[in-house]
Amino acid sequence: MRITRALTTALTVGALTLLTAPVADAVEAASVTAAPAAGSASAAVTPAAAAAPDGFLYAWEHPHAGGVHCRWNSANANWAGCRDKVSDVWNNGYPGVAEDVKLYRDTDWNGSWVCLHQGHSLPDLAASGLRFFSPGHGQGELVNDRVGSHLWVSAC
Image (cartoon, rainbow, N blue to C red; front, side):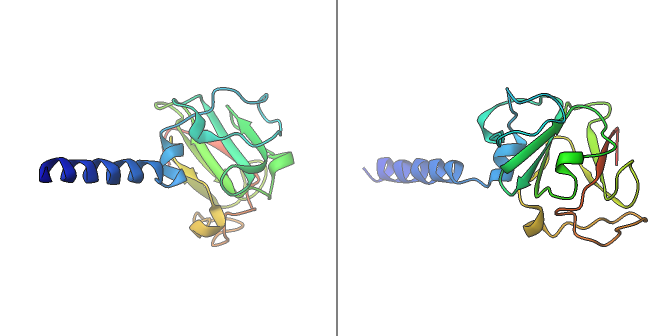
């Protein structure tokens, strides 16, 4: 009886832990199976709803996949509709060559940058406190609402 109760309690705790895992962990293991054309804006996509890398970088206007969203599967020198107003990013690119993404402060791959590794997500850039760290315009600034372009790279 005690063993059954202990096992039941352990399984319940384990299930609750999985169900309440942070969004970043769910996003890291997920992908989006359907979304609009590259570079377009649309309603938010829920990253946790899918399962495998799809080759895209996703960016949302608000934390936790809220608001307007953009996605790209190649380098983009001008985020246009998403420039300087993104608070959630997710690199759902394919592992291998050019799997990481450099997020640049300015358009045309200029200014300071930060790296977002393949499979990683920052669902709330403001709360993360992430700052541009490389030399260039914007070094030391918060990344939240300040990205202008991105480039896929093999390593950061």
